[in-house]
Image 1 (spheres, helix red, strand yellow):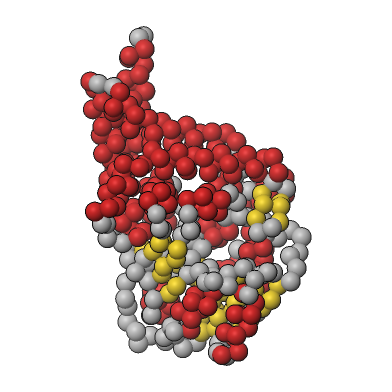
Image 2 (image 1 turned 180 degrees about the vertical axis):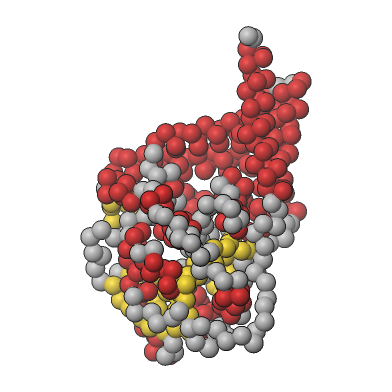
Length: 398
């Protein structure tokens, strides 16, 4: 068998591995629909919003003010100041003094066996009085009417968990390219849309907006069951799905917004705690993902230039599919495409290499020193103890 034939076989495999996810994405286009506006006349249950905040003085005021402006009668907002070293605690205290619906909690010490954010979420949920809980972040800005629309939909559909994708704001070409690839990986490659398929076991949770029925949250063991998961948001969704609770993921880009990261470097650093965790801390899985990225996201852009014949045709189709897929998922997460956004299609290999670097960095740091987050380092042996939780749960019947 000649080298040329082997290369053609390899390119054919790359074609299948890259085009199939794109074809599935096209088939399921619209599988993550926008949150609809429903009847406003229904009586809504009490809702408790839990906002963990650590050193978020620059964003927490705007986020909480957008919650205060919601047209939701039975609302309480619990803001947890988690050992902040900046003015977060002061801002939270000022907001609570101005509005009786806001309750400020101050965490001064992190107990053993907890990650900081997970503990803050748990602390906030404990005194909550709502029939429904909304876990969100300290930098999320809510459009007017978001809470009413979301809870109305969840109640009308008989859901136990509703998660919304926010509009992600990214500044600078490099960060936007990375965001575009990240959105494609989340939707098309990982298959986030499968959470809306009742026949699928895929569970999804997004930190910007995790709306959970209180009884379901308690049934899964609360955040205690996820105390050492760096990817707490998505694991919450996966655990709820693992217990058989009804779940849906919808596009909330018109209702929620957040500045993703300030720069590409900040994004890669920010993903340090969760990238390796999402692979269950398994080296072989990390290597497998790296090989897939290099083969399907980088090589086609090189091969279409240096090769000819059928190889160029196959890889050219791969490049076209990747470009179209990345632009589509970017549109879903950021809004209408502009002329400048088309440049992002050419930066897929660059973004894929950055993504690969983020995985390598996350795995290397975790294996050599443990996972460091918010000033605390956690041994990998401790974190591995909570891997694969969803697989140990039995689904309940409804």
